[in-house]
Image (cartoon, rainbow, N blue to C red):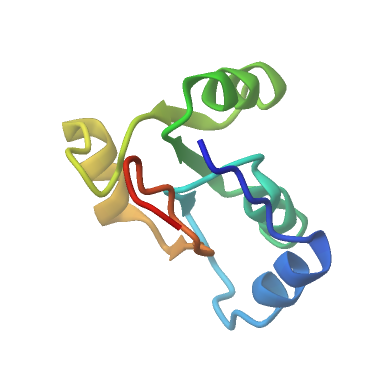
Length: 107
């Protein structure tokens, strides 16, 4: 996988620039190391957190580190599970920073 993690300073700027005050679900459908969700938790500590990650090792790491998060393994852009699709519809705030992993693509 072509893991690229956005620097924390960039993540914080993105999160603090949002104007939403009340959030039920915060989701990152290309969660990587979870930096976006960790930053969001500092602003919305009571929200539910959803991480979707294509890399199974990273998804397992997120599960072990953040027991309270809903962590899904897979390609959200491909074929999300029914449960993940329902969560996406209820999500108050989706955070996402490119680049996406594109298996088989050339750079």
